[in-house]
Image 1 (cartoon, rainbow, N blue to C red):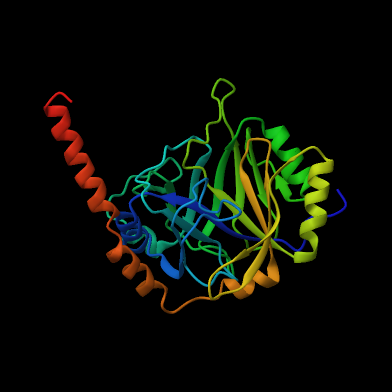
Image 2 (image 1 turned 90 degrees about the vertical axis):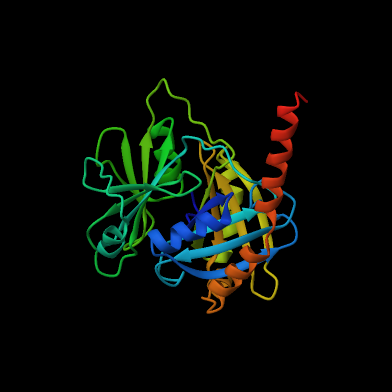
Length: 304
């Protein structure tokens, strides 16, 4: 491949969330993440940032520091969608923070001593009672499952050029730069098919904007999948960014965004927490779902 995304920076992972109230409480109160920016949209994203939904939605970026130096989470909320079906594509995100470890009350530990906790939508986190290396983000690792590790490495390392190592049988650790959140690929047992459900997420990377269109062309030429061709995305009142979205051999979505535009878009908004709280308070989706459930229960009781 002639055009490898370089320099490349790992930006965030996208979670779809159903119960925004419980979700934001968990991330703020349990994992001690801070809202960095909150944006509301009246219609679906041209790059399916919010999934295959055309209606009103919101995006909340949360993290342990500014987006230009930290791997963060993007919470996408589709108004009127109560829940999503989990697949086995996403495994977990690892957080290295003694402060977060000590803050979690229920101490359920895994074999490596990590606390294992889950968000209200079922997304798993591993929290270690240690600090990241100097200059690194506390979110140190994103784990995804793959069906064929060799095919995945041919794409991620051989084609995209990510540095790779094999720390254990059936696993690969990928990095696109120093002090960044690593991507760990874990091969599923041969008898277990990879399922993305409807909760599937997306990982995002920044690279020089002039590399995006050549990257798309080379992906097509190599026979890999382009999920969303080169497109400009507008955020009301903020910067416009250019993106190309690819899919790896298992369908994991990979967004490459132009660095300059994203740096402008991703500036921390001091009002993010307030904007999120106001949006949650104004949202009557929970009441609507509760009334619908009550009506369905009455109908069932009456044999309807």
